[in-house]
Length: 306
Image 1 (cartoon, one colour):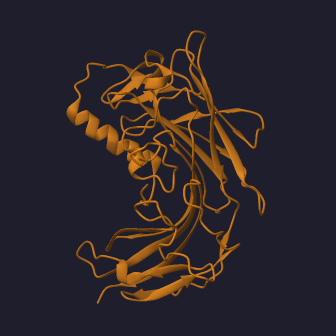
Image 2: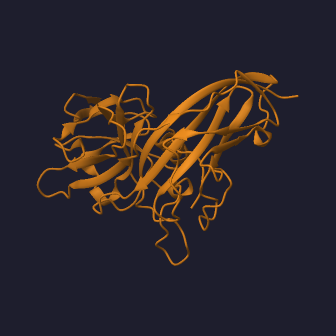
């Protein structure tokens, strides 16, 4: 159980890149997508067609994300096969999504580049206190196992109430208050809070309410008042500049399970799960926990190293 930040599509791209270095493929077909979420034709590079892959050999990465900017809850779906190739839906395979058990909406193919094959749709953001239950289903023709029951849970909206200074220096600490405040973390429930920072002059930074062993919620990120602590002394310099604009993001993350028709998530995804339950005797994270629900808010400041 690790506490790294998570971008499902970026991670899948990196896994596909690794697989491309170690697996030789001869598929030169190319796919084209339509609004129905199906595709046909041929693919090139590290892409393939879903119709030739059994459901338990399709390794998904699903997410539903709301950034509080009014654009809604964005749903993403992508798969890799055993050889690390991205899959475009074909042969009657269709991927759909629903919001809080409402009508199913067919996802559309947003990108069919070799390293960016994914499907997406958007739902309207909920009101205060509303949790989105986003269902992501794969429907397949007769004779193939469908996977209708993967669910992402996007936590209720929140706001950052602390006024972030326009400029900060290395070593500064900032207590970030949010409304409503975080609830106490329960180890193994798939739920966590994260604080991330990124910018041209810093190495990407993530702090989480889950430590790297997943055995305790006492990481110090959330204080007794329910505020998240942004400790800039933990930031490391990267690049030639000693000063840059940085984005600080507060994330409420929830990981949930895939439909059992899938064998597991893409290999390696277990390295980044925050607080997914351990179901193996070795204590490893259950690799069927491949669905990310994300509610996130961002603030910006100028940061300077000495």
